[in-house]
Each structure stands twice: as structure tokens, then as C-alpha cells.
Image 1 (cartoon, rainbow, N blue to C red):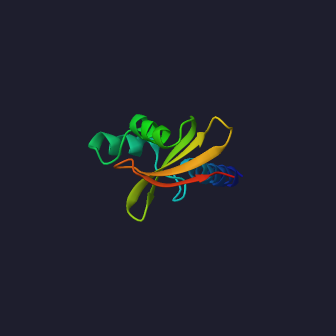
Image 2: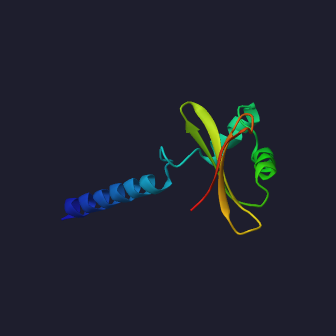
Image 3: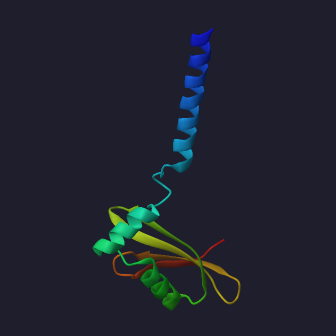
Length: 108
């Protein structure tokens, strides 16, 4: 009886660990973690969140809704969502190192 209860608790514990890992570990499509972005910015590999926000607003004035850093094809790219004065949402893709605008489109 004792071994059976212990085995059940071990299985439940393992399930909880798997579920936590699925929820909290970064996924390949979820972008870079804030901690990694901070390290990259401190090393000068990418622009800081403040600088990229200024650059994005220079291309499309408005309120920044979301900023995500992703690595695509070996290159870091910021994806910035901006709400403009006309209540339209825009997605801007900026080179994370230079801030150069790569793509801008109205978000659906």
C-alpha cells in the first residue's frame, strides 16, 4: 500500500513538472526572453527597448502595444505593434541591431 501511494505521488509530481515546463519554458516561436534581450542589449548586439521604441514611433507615431524580440535566420528582429491616432494597429519589423525598418503593415 505504501509503495503504491508513493508511486502515485511520484507520477503526479512528474506530471506537474512537465506541465510547468510546457507553460514557462521559452518555445522556439515565442521569441527571446526578456533576460536574454537585456544581455544582448548590454553587449551592444541589439538596441535597447527604449531606443527601438523611439525608432518605431519615428516610423509610425502612436502608442506602443507590444514589443517582441525574435531571432530569424540568424538575425535579431524586433516586432513592434503600434496603435495610431486613427485606432489602427500596425506591425513594424525592425532590425534589432540598427533599428532599420524592414517591414510595416496594418495588423488585422
